Amino acid sequence: MEEALATRTPAARALRAFAFFAALFAGAALAQDNPLARRPTDPRSVLPGNWNGANLESRSNCAAPENNGAHGTYAAYVVSFDPLASMLGVDETAITGLHCTYLGAYGAGGAPTWAGTYSCTDGKQGSFRATGILATPNAMSLRLSIKLTGTETCDVDSILGGSRF
Image 1 (cartoon, rainbow, N blue to C red):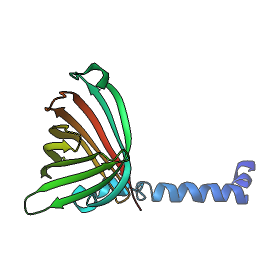
Image 2 (cartoon, rainbow, N blue to C red):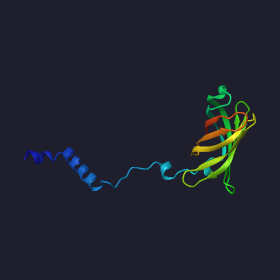
Image 3 (cartoon, one colour):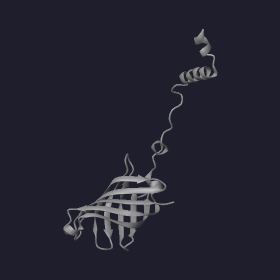
Image 4 (spheres, one colour):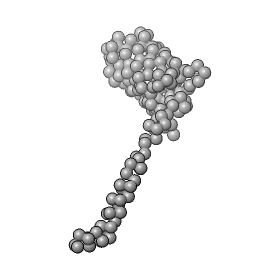
């Protein structure tokens, strides 16, 4: 009889009701997915425009050993995309006044791809391929593998990163 009285208390009734509804609706309420995972952002739709950020580089195998190592500078970027030619271009202006252009073919099948040529106003030139592309309306990160082919022949692991409102 004590057990029967114990199930009549408001707390016991609330606990039984909770257990009943939990069992009734088990599996009915699923956790929300990450909105970016649900609808991946197509870089072609958000990359074009102006960005401010940094160009970070890790250089190795340079002809001039003093050019090896980590380097970085503030940079402003203007990104453009030509949908008819499937070409993506980045014009970079560093705080030092150096201007570099990256221009290459962009592919959107599966993971995005981008590869092309690179040249700067200080004479640096070479080829690049993207090893990672992240683009949201407010952030971009283009990870590039660059091979300099001019008077300096470094292998460069570079990240062009930027933000905007």
